Image (tube, rainbow, N blue to C red):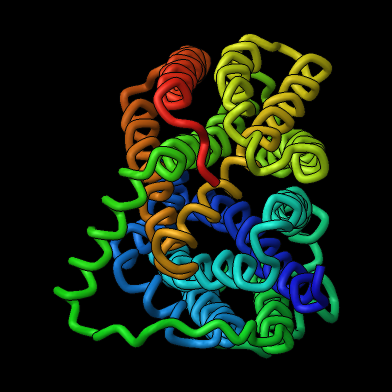
Length: 417
């Protein structure tokens, strides 16, 4: 792998680490403000809406500007969001600003990976990238739990830390002020690392900036990728997977609180079990699954759906933790090869930036829909156990349909990658 690829991994790790820690801190801020529980999944809704609304524009933007530089700028936007939180901005609005920065960061990141490594090493690169993303989620969750722990919150009112916070009189009074300031430092580090990532040298034809033209071009690209046999199948899988992942993140936190009676600072660590599983699954897929065998991994999607009701029925950590790790492992085994297949077909049919923008639009639209349904069911006081059972069985059924579709396509036409 080229050196620039590993610099990219380090930069995106720091940015994703801060994103995941920030989510836990903002949930704690909601609790501090005594807001209703349904606001928690709505945070992710606000974060994700920019991915959907701005999808026609971020792909051409990522193709028009050196991608590493764009990533650094977007970390600056994330800093503005967390700065607003420190000033007393509503947590939903602050996290939405961070999501705005992330929406342009994603196509630049994945597009640059495609440009740097080439198709022969794309599955391996995606394995590295997925491990990095999940490690960031793992350590970000741990960092978030630490930032809302009684130990660190106690430091905010102790000695030198208290004097330093009092000197920053522009901060809105909050027990989480020190945590927010520490996250600002992590985002600053991510921006600095991005500036060190080299330009790939890839250039694309200039595209007009008229919104109507960009939207028309985006929808044409979207239809073209869905119409492709391998592109449409892999896009359906990743769209479903990321919607599941976002919803499961909140469902596990709620389940841990309702069933296992864990506080937020400890429930956040349960997500580490999922992350460890994803790391293992992604590493195995990146090492042993070639691009032409990507569709064989669809069966793991069925297993992912069936493990969710099993988790919901668990009543102890000894049972829940291995099941959460298995969910992560089968998810990593499935999504890494299919994501590589999607990137490969998208790069062939469209361009690196436009392909990732189309992928991001569909995946994040799935996140919005699933989170909206999840938040609505919570507002209706549906049991978290029953909700997870229904959710998991629906996922298993949908993955079964995609396997049937893949077999039908294989009978008609061989896989073309």
